[in-house]
Length: 185
Image 1: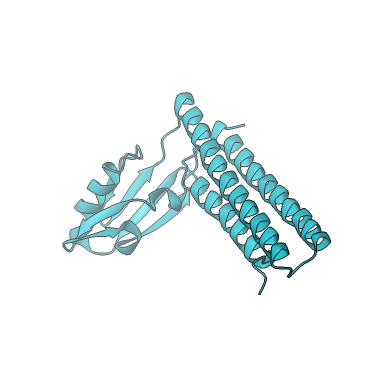
Image 2: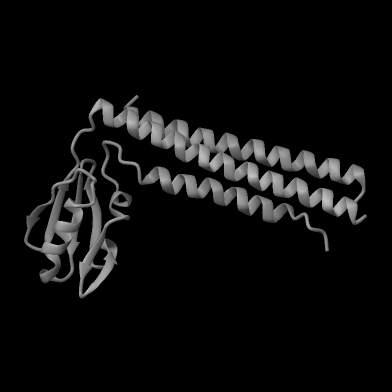
């Protein structure tokens, strides 16, 4: 059984890109996004629960999030959790609904977020390069075991490099788009 598997490398590289896209979604731009509240956990029923398990989160307007708390007794803890999450959001209680106006970002904050997007991208690039290295090592192992010829190894190495290049291009494109969005260009 050869150690090299192109489908496994593709899956792992795709995973690096998807992880990056998920990280980038969590970065706050001037627009309201329900993913902004994903990291928020609420202390209710004697347990620490994700916000989306005690309330419905929606973005009815570009600069407003609403959190519809299911149980009236949890409105206070949800409000407290959002305020203390360090997102710079101040909920306005309206019955069982909390309205969260999204404030404008300062220029300084925009630059910090753009830098963070760059750090996320570098982490994804490193992950893609690690997958490439694993693929190249697997090909060398297969060649040593005489499961593939030197020509096959070189051909597969070219495929692995092309896959890596396209993955890194996808990472750069996603990051560039997010940085433009953050900086409001």
